Amino acid sequence: MATLKTALIALTTAITVLAFSLSSQAAMNPNIEKALISICKSVTTNKIHKYKRTAKSYRLRDKTIALKVICNGQDIISFAESYGADKTAATLQRSLGKANIIDIAATEMLLVTFTE
Image (cartoon, rainbow, N blue to C red; front, side):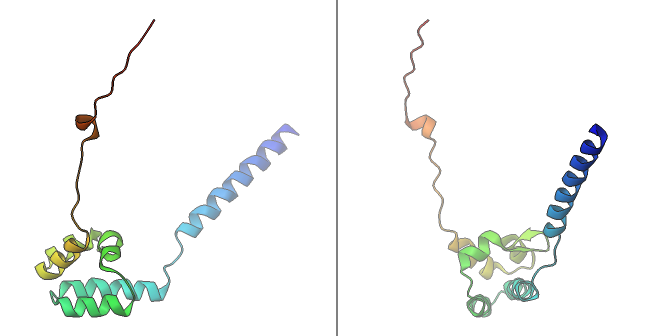
């Protein structure tokens, strides 16, 4: 009885793991794949108006594209730069804005007193 219970638990676990792994390997929606390929191609042309028209046709914002699109294993800004498309890379970089890094530890003093 114990071996049957152990076998059922193992089988249930295996089926659950298999179900999750199969869904993560599912094929991409063809429309989304087409949109991403178009965006990647438009970035390599170094023509900002072509990139903007493509992004607008798929209703994608520059910041979303800059943060989330990967072309041939590179982020889209590096991908554009590797093709010599400096204008489109700069446009995408500007869409990210400027980042300010503040070291909180350096600006705040915390007083901690230990008593025994």
